[in-house]
Image (cartoon, rainbow over all chains, first blue to last red):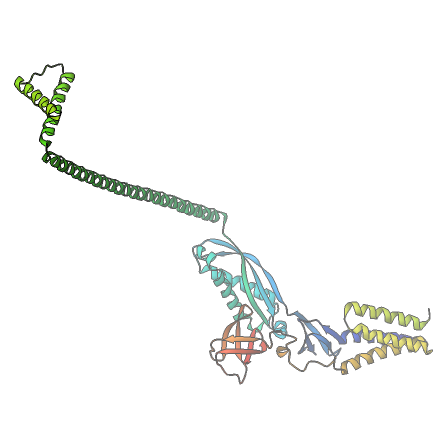
Length: 306
Length: 140
């Protein structure tokens, strides 16, 4: 009797332990437990201390309500222009409704992954290769929208789909690289020729400006010289006129005529003297009497001066 | 080592384990073991001690269930901000089409629906429920 009572006590103790284990559940923040009561959905346990009734209640599903990044396996898609393209993406999703996530789909992760892949193939199939590189945002949005429509009852929300890599075949990649190299070389050549053209224009323009300025300078110099010469001629003429006026005035004075005659005679004699020096030709006056008369008159002047 | 010491050592170990894990049920079991220690100290035999430990553990759990800590949430999970952090957040809706719209929220496009009694006008709305992947909105 003692043994059986102690056995009962031990069994009771073990049952109590299991009961306590199964009854008390502390749910962490951003987690949810789905409780079934006798096989039927009963409640979603939120964060905090939760007590379930053992035997009739069962924790059927546990969900994390955090945003989850899900790596979608790489897949080969065919573009509109029949090019194979390997696309690698990542999906960000979150369980928004624990009850629907439990009962809406047998495997929501597989469901959204497969749907993302099939939608991606469909979207890429409508685009040409060059467009796929430009239209990433459009591809991402289309996939999110498509999954959203289907996943209304799966209790999950796909927040983002991001394409990690778009890898065309090696031959296409080489062709693209050649194309971009040629494009850049073309741009470089055009830029070089543009530079040379601009250089020639600049040089010609500079030369034109220099020539213009030079001719302007020469013109100004010629004008200045002419004006200078004109001023000099005018000044000389004025000086000659003044000198002649003075000579005239001097002639009108008493003895002026005789002084003029003397000066003329001196010049005459000097001129003859010079002719004799410079030429080996003997110059004889046509009228020798003239010479003597000149000398006589010169002497007469000298005498009258005494 | 006497019986009551054994019970108390067990209770102490469980309390330490509880501090590390935060499961809460270990605390209830520790209360049961402490009750076993009391029974041993008062001179009860081993079977009675075990019975008392089990009964007090269950009683502590029942008391916890009756307390405000063990009371289940009054609100539905789909409307509980503790379950879904989006509840209570604000969303701007530019245009409604038969009580539905597609809006940008948290950097992603979401389907939104008007809650009963809400007016379908452009402006700010408050998230009152998350149903599947749809946000149910009420006028802010």
